Amino acid sequence: MTARRLTEEWIHLGLGATAEPQPPFDGMEWYADYTRRYARDGKEARLISKYCFAEDWNAWEMHPSGAEVVICTSGEMVLLQELDGEVVETRLSPGEYAINPAGVWHTANIAETAEAIFITAGVGTEHRPR
Image (cartoon, rainbow, N blue to C red; front, side, top):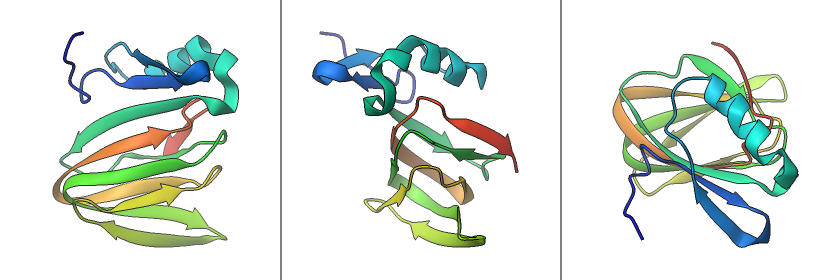
């Protein structure tokens, strides 16, 4: 077994309770490649990732295949979700989490720095400019 860093190599959780390390994230095309790699797992696929943030997100995202869990591990972040035509803000501190329901557009504001772990129904993820 090899120790890995979640900020560098994410994990795909797939059918049959499989867990597979992923290639390093190298830009937005990575998500399309991920979808192609695991389309066979459909809505049951989950991507586990960890991000370190020093500024607000520059895009909105939405996961049509299922909910996403956001767990703040350090710093503070404000998750913004578009719900029923309104933008709802949820402040997350270390140890707190929020859930982005399937199909809900979301983004985040970062006051200084923050880290978070994401458990995402990643197949079919969509992005749009903020």
